[in-house]
Image (tube, rainbow, N blue to C red; front, side, top):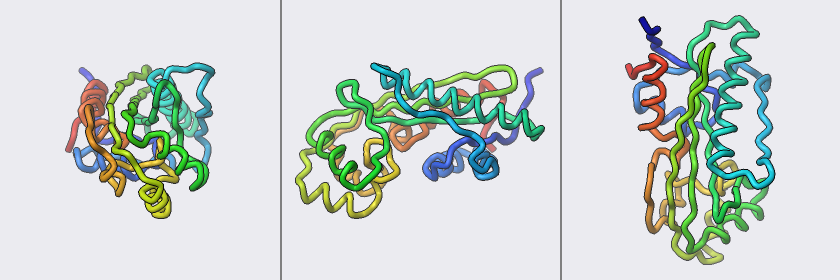
Length: 204
């Protein structure tokens, strides 16, 4: 008989992921809050790495590192969920901007174009790691310099992949969307629930 879990560990600091897990009734413990920097993953893309492969690799690495942390600290073991999101245009990966100027440059490149948003979710147990991938296409309207400067001035782009949050003020930039809205936020709900069910985790 498979083990049934009523909670998971979340290996992410993203408030959007926490909010989405709460919305779908998944109880979780914030692992990174207690790990105090002990879980580290190099997020540098490999040379010519495909964006989808990149997020899948990072999500698996984060989940694996978090499970290793649990095992070495003799903490109660239950499934660990990790995720990674990236924005890509023409195969080029857009990470999180370091500065306001960097954010403005990202937005100028995305202006008037359709880009891809990839979010990979990984769940790890003591014996295995499995992943799911969400791929979406987002078309931005043409952005003026004023649009970009006003948005950057809000501070919202600075910790977001691709320098925008679709659930924030950047929603006004989106002309069309094909894919998963929650995936673009950072945690595709459909894929996440499917993955958790395979590990014996169900919503409350």
